Image 1 (cartoon, helix red, strand yellow):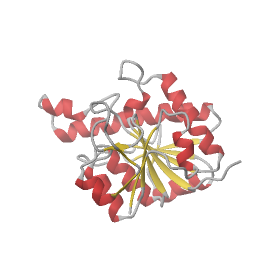
Image 2: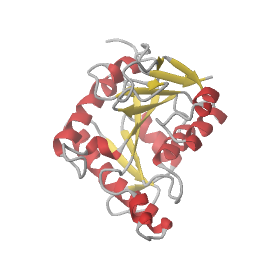
Image 3: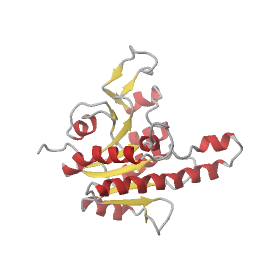
Length: 238
């Protein structure tokens, strides 16, 4: 069996990754597909944490645009991530992967509260940990939650799962001649205002020297190859 280049990784998944053709809700087939993508890297012995978004169920900016209090809208989004996390936990465990969901907002009847040392212990025991509830605070995205949790659990890398195979100088869906970057420094990513993660998250990664790999999660080999240390997607670091 090949050897992984990273011991502990954080995978940032958008909520939309769990939705079906309609682009909303939770599609069990999509969730099962995600679990099957994660299984091979789990079998390499990699310790895996996942931060999940909620865009398939709720987008706070829609509520705010209609007069909702932004704090309320953000808390609704945090709660929605818990539903996504539980769906992902179920799919992973159906594939024989022990999984725990930890939430920044306590929901003790259905999930564990986020406790850093407990999360690390789960990882060391070979359990996947799904972090839900964002940071537990309004006005912070799940990208920022991924950067925060990665630093807290001493992950080796954050893998940002997207629908494109890296970072381009322009939108490749609009400009077919857009140039892809194999590597970017944190400063270059901030200067170019890359949209793969928000600026707060990238700045946090820069301040803590936490590398990012942006890749196409739906590619047959990208995630597995990245964990093996192959040149996949776009690497953002020092």
